[in-house]
Length: 299
Image (tube, rainbow, N blue to C red; front, side):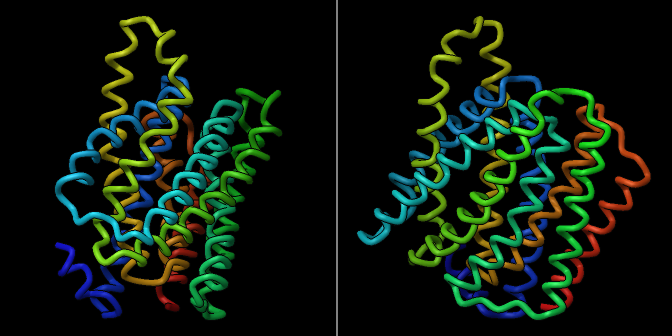
């Protein structure tokens, strides 16, 4: 599998596969956000998801994939710090604001930062047409957030803090996207990076949320565990798809396409969380999709 993935690097087939993986990551990331924001406390949901994928990844990292090269350990330390900060900010934002407001702000902030980061650190270039696509996509995402902000009726007293935290979370999404792309390119086998990423990344949130878990009644533990295991497999395919996309093609393009997750988030909020979708919201979602098409078509 690794050899086949690497054989596509720099080819037209690799480019097309990378774009498909980025769109898959968009859908799955929106689903993961809904799982974290759903019935349980976001801190508990994230801890259950992370603990589950850390345990599942452990035997894969230790026994099935090649061990990381020595130069990878400092990179993994950076991964741990950046992702820990991102998760703290995300859980704090979800605890204070409505999902359909917080999520689009996070996703709308990150592609611009990701494109700039990829340009600066990875020497990637975007055409003028692609920049137009990014701006169209981001306009749709922020329009969706502003629309939801106008009509949201829950947690209004903490909404300003939620929005500030969402902006900070968006910055860290861009940071980890760029940094992780650097990390997966720094090792010979991309699945070594992915397995060790999930193994290491599965430690922090369970430690942070341990007291909350112990305070739960026994009847609540099994549903939380089920959500954690489901979320773990969603995270494997979501993050794995994005990272393989950044290994095969431009980080900026993959990051921009991944932010079509705002469309999927709105649909999930409507279909699964009982939130209404208006004609204006549908139009803004179409704008997001149009921006993604421009980014892809101008590449």
